[in-house]
Length: 393
Image (cartoon, rainbow, N blue to C red):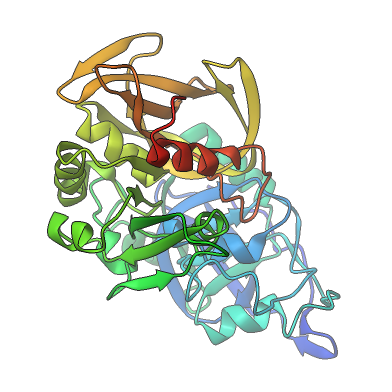
């Protein structure tokens, strides 16, 4: 339980603006604690401690709604080099509960930046901690699993902060979709000639997803998670999309019920991340919590049908419990696993084919919108277009 000493002196919020090294404390629910310095807003925050292996794209990561109620640890040691800009946000705000970095950049140098990461964290009230051994912290989570955590600039006693950590709700069983979904319908127009209309149910959607769809001539109606089948059919969709999002899929019964109705209605379906887990549950599979999850932009995935490997962006702490190498009969046709993670054989994709063998619905556990991340999986948006067009896969 001993903590490494704080490693750094002063850093800078932005060029020419000194930031005094205010002490900060991080305490995990198993009692392990780390000392560091304040980064971002001062105060106290709680959530689930998780780590991301991405070396770039911190702005897109921090604004991903799937990180709601999670304290994010950056494994890349140097964070903040490119500052903060108005173009790379993936939603309306930063969603992480807290941010943990080793070495914040003293300055930012991107021509696109209009401020520093530290200043933006402070503006949005995001409590962070820097100048601690993030490698030791990450190894501890890899060995012991994701767990509750507290970060504080006002508490100096690890035992007192631990007591408050243990009072917080764990991620297992958490239903968080209502916290992140849009309040009302939003329409993203098709780029160029309109070809299709898609109803996108917002479970925590990233802005790049409707952008990728719109680039293919799709008018995207982003709908609140509480939408009904009537709300969906009212927009006259050629297909339905379920997005990524936070929380435990086992607690998202309403989304499962809605997708069941959508499949009953025979509407083509595409899901990403949380949308894959909801798809799995609708097909009759279970879900479970991973030890520490998959988060980053370098996760290898095997397409079982094609024998090809994709490097993917991922952010999930739960997975679908479906059999590999087997076809499963459902009332809509035959379901099977299509993709697996090459690191641990976790299910990364599912598909549903009707009795004629035609692909009618599919989902992946990773993020083909690639914000940030590689573009290996961009073809999946074209596959959705083909499904809506009734083409054979």
